[in-house]
Image 1 (cartoon, protein in one colour):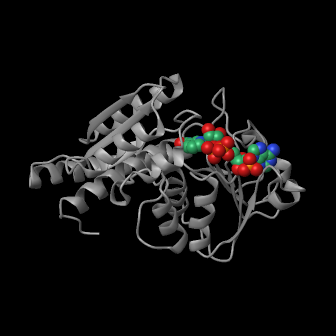
Image 2 (cartoon, protein in one colour):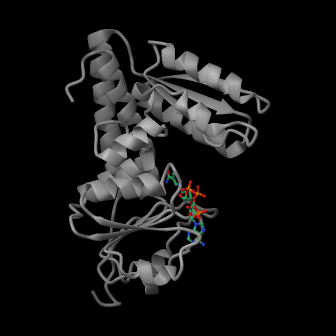
Length: 288
Ligand code: NAP
């Protein structure tokens, strides 16, 4: 590709809408067959405005897809023991099929302990060690929603991964690390970069597939993108901008996700799809 060419956009919003449509019909069929709608429990600790908005949005999208939600709101002063207790109750409740604990939960809480109280069969947000192991071992299980969304986008655009060099910038437990594991499982050669990586640009320049999951606006510039690379921008920063400098990157990439409208809508679509999967399995009507 030359500098004057423009990458094709990966339409996450369109793909997510199709996934949600399929979820909606599966949820309706399940409700008709069993008399029980899929049910997602959302747990929110404290009143962080961004978290309140995220949870509200997830519940409203669920409702539109025919997925019921059970909302548990706990005060910011909640202890680890109380939170683990509340999640354990949901894990044991047969009327709840999926559990989402909104991150972050407050620094005084052991968030890992709280995540691990989610029963593996209800971990529709893919945050437990069980789900991470399943992603790492290439076994059936729930995927972390953003990495799961990234893989579905790559598949929708027929991106061949075998033998390709995938570079993941970021190694968080919910995004960078599992994204790399899923790419590895598809036979990509994976390099992780993080805040201690030396000469990041030279590594990014080798990427056939680049996943940016840093949380810094326009952190990766087009000059560092290999011509023809597939660029997945998972970042979402203030002002609706991603981790990749879109205008310069689109002159080098062959495919690129926009922000917004790329990875973002896929995350919630995967959450809904995995909630319906969980409900189908728990109600004994799963075909897959
Ligand atoms: P995070 O937990 O803060 O992790 C950021 C990662 O980036 C860390 O691994 C960190 O390295 C690395 N990093 C930070 N500064 C760096 C630098 N200068 N050079 C190289 N690496 C650097 O963030 P996250 O939760 O993974 O989220 C990342 C981005 O994705 C954010 O913009 C977030 O809003 C977005 N996001 C979007 C969705 C969605 O639905 N679209 C979902 C989740 C997150 P260390 O490990 O060394 O600290």
